Amino acid sequence: MEGGASDAKLAIESSPIRGEGVSLEECQRMIQRSLRTPMVKFLVENLEKSGCIVADNFIKAVNCTKQISGGYTRGEGIMVCSNYMNIQDEVNQVVIHELIHAYDDCRAANLDWADCAHHACSEIRAGHLSGDCHYKRELLRGYMKMRGHEQDCVRRRVMKSVTANPYCSEAAATDAMEAVWDICYNDTRPFDRAP
Image 1 (cartoon, rainbow, N blue to C red):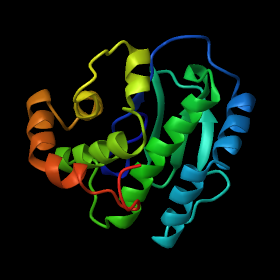
Image 2: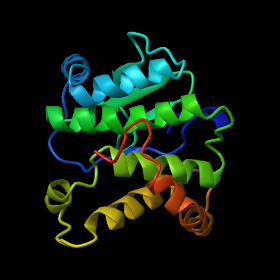
Image 3: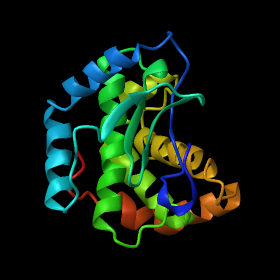
Image 4: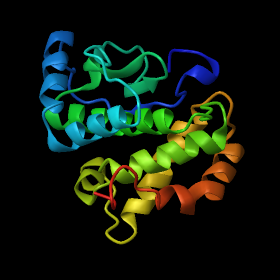
């Protein structure tokens, strides 16, 4: 992800290449539609209750040079990669996933995105709570496993993000994910339980 050191969430939400994406203008309209969905509204309200203001430009459409669907950077907000978005559901998923990172960043005063365990924890939570790993999404990605698919998916996606962090080798990412798995997977805040 573009950005630097510990001020940024260094991992990214990866995106499969399909379609040609949408224009910046259309993506911004899709972001506005996502802001009206119940889950996004709930996350924004809880971000604000935690003391973090979500300004009008907190979530923005950008053209990305890397094959990613979006990201979150402390102090800058959320970016949604218009050139990898094709349908409203993809935008909604990126916004939800990244809002969970923003919520984690807001509620944890000492969150350090360069720390592999901190990064892994937020990725575990975002993967588990956002719906990224719903079995229907997994089937569309070509993963046909019916039992245990959700945790396998979360683990796969955590590893992809954390190993993209320049501070985390594959071994460090694996160790970090395993060390924090139970605590972070079971931490459903701000939800009462996993949606």
